Length: 381
Image (cartoon, rainbow, N blue to C red; front, side, top):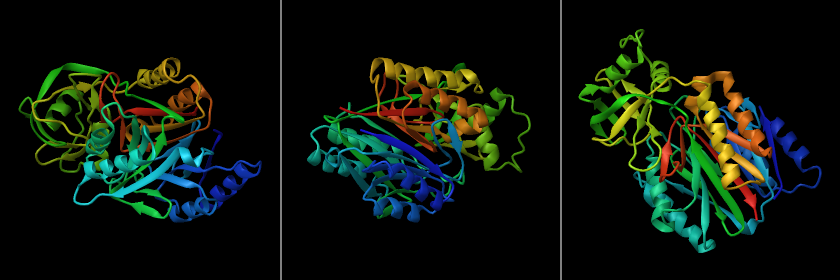
């Protein structure tokens, strides 16, 4: 498989870059497209569609190729995979039927490939991303390979989209199904945030809405342990909530596998509760996390090195889903992590800053992650 990556700040730049990529006879069959809500999604998709290129796409909170971080732009990873080795499937959610939607995708994929693996993206802040993963497990078993992320919208947190040829939805899922007998797909989700303090108990929660920890409003506890003294609940806004989420996020402890991050993305300033991006069961155990430092980025790079050494030493292309919270925490320094990951394989790469990351936790199950980087490596056999 041959791959090339390109970027642009406008439809014209993307068209020009696409033409340049194909001038040497390169004929891509598949495009991974990550773009800002500010871009003309329909026009860019039409350009790819006119070339007969299948599209797997999602809107973002930022996008990158190689170590170059972008904003309000488009990045595309082009691959010339044999069309018999992959299929794009698309489902819109009906009455929150998240698990049923991906079960349908998995069943259709099983009719095409004996052993499918999946790259997925979902949209809508209300989507229960873990239910998406369960749908694949229902059909393909616990060990199915599924990697991906949830679409963004330049941090507006209002409306996100996934899309493919002729289809787009702000409440749906797009899946790239791969024939694992022909294409190897391996991935690793790494966080790096260090825990601090003692283990605490979630004493009141419902789904992803956390009210109290050790019978204290979770916001009050976060402010206390974080030493956050400049919070005025009367004037606090979503920017304040994001600052709290990236400064002292929750770590959900697991019976098996590494802890997973559950930052409070939305704060109810009246009752001091958090709406997290993933489920935090009542009675579960949590710890707080230290504010991030360079070790967090270094751990991600080490995780990618381990993936190369133990599972997939040679790859043709790399796709990266990195949490939007990481760029908020690190700012321009985030390019150090992206550059470090890129240099491990030194192949064409495209990535996005996502609202959540979907992958198997280290030594654990398929789960939804936050404040995490998920590296996905592809290799034609």
